[in-house]
Amino acid sequence: MALDDRQLDPRRFNSESWGGPHAGRGPRTGRRGDEDIREDLSEALMHDDYLDASGVEVRVENGDVILSGEVDEVDDKLRAEILAQRTRGVGQVRNGLSVRSRDADGLGPTLGMDVSQA
Image (cartoon, rainbow, N blue to C red; front, top):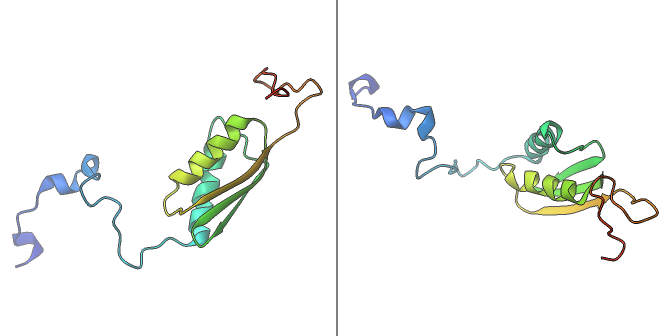
């Protein structure tokens, strides 16, 4: 039976229905390479409107992500980790990011919260 002779279910080819019961299941050898993961995560960090990732370094070893460097806010550290976790093919995320120095009063650069007593 040729492909043209079969009745095809149009729902299987509708772009809105790509979330079916087998979504995310690839071939056995379909593990993503470290460089592909690093590239995708770097793109996600670069294009995030709320994160200045210019001080972030991304390493990937056997599918696990290691984030290092500095960010401006505690929220930025968490945002980078979430982006890493959402990247296809990532196993574990080790977040070694640090938050840049606070001023002498212990105030964050934009949060205006006193974190020296925390």
